[in-house]
Image (cartoon, rainbow, N blue to C red; front, side, top):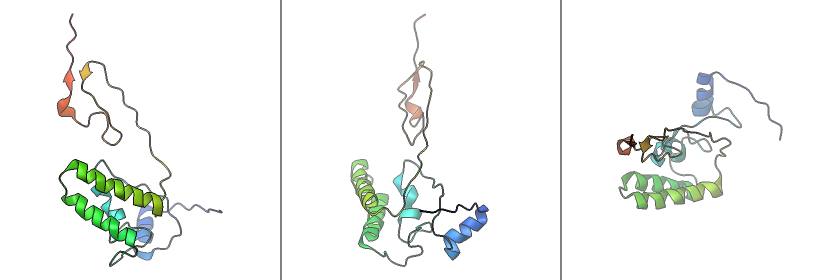
Length: 141
């Protein structure tokens, strides 16, 4: 595959992505977080960053329709275990259909002094996702 990379000024890139669709491939960083619903702009068929078939009035495929349903259900579900089941299904669909291919995942490293207890770093939450649960260990003198 021959690739001719072209760097664009950000506003030009946004215009090509969202309006003119004048691109064959794009490498862009998408933000997110521990909450799957933050990615709805990419994954909902009506989302503004739904790159592979933008500005759909209705889902173009059965799998996109199912992703829309999962995101609607996930936003309303308060039970964390039930939400996990929904978003696990979403990940399986995306792994099969591959509408986008993620090429990079940054590595985060954390160092915390051993005087703190109950520190539980997580990949998407940083070193202190539950800072209210951290305590200082009092060492006997």
